[in-house]
Image (cartoon, rainbow, N blue to C red):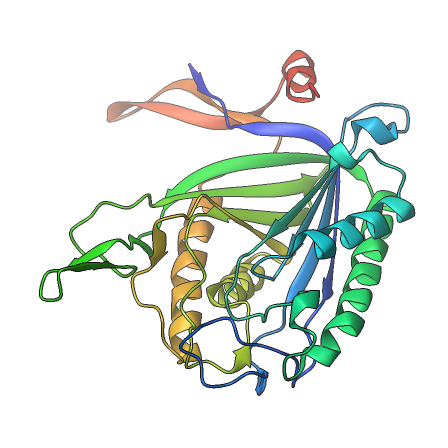
Length: 321
């Protein structure tokens, strides 16, 4: 008689900042590249801080917070991630178990590790990392002060941007890491929408598994790869920050990738954005369920459905932490 929309009742906040490195910084991430330093910027790199907390009448305890940081970088070394964690934990008193740092995994951001300092443009890395750590710590502080009751709704869609990338080159008798047109690939898109109690959308979240390897050795520009255009399109449709969460993309990459053309990266991003928006458009209003409303005789006897508010007991279940 009714269909439940997957949703959660929490306290939530999101803050975001530009973390684009300076042009000229060490950029090589591909063995086939013929350049060492970034020649320009395709799209800005972003850092996002999200905080989730239980929905309660009192202020949440530090132990109950979940802090999620997303960075438009491929990876960090142990030293770099430890310094980032220490900076954040000094700014907000939460247990280290409550802090999760995630990477979009773009391969066009540059390799920001201290072991590359002696490389061309590597002298810019320490200063960049210091600014990055300070920015992220400030974002977490801002998010902590902005926590408010919200409902997070979840939807599922499909996108065939990602392809299996374990291809047998029969002519050369070898496997290559590249598009395999005959293999199945996980095409699941999980999209979420965080809605404040006044109805305003606070953020959208897109989870998809696909290596951001559209741009490869020919590319000399700092870029979030397909993720930048994906965010742009979603945010144009829904006026709120769009946060990307990389999925389990081990053997999945863009069907068209390993190129230097940024237009291909943008096209890939738009493809994912439209799939995510399609999933989000399937959602009804927050804090409702889709319920059978009874028959209406209109030539045929029609069965009508409507979105009805959740009962208080059901809302309490959705706030379990």
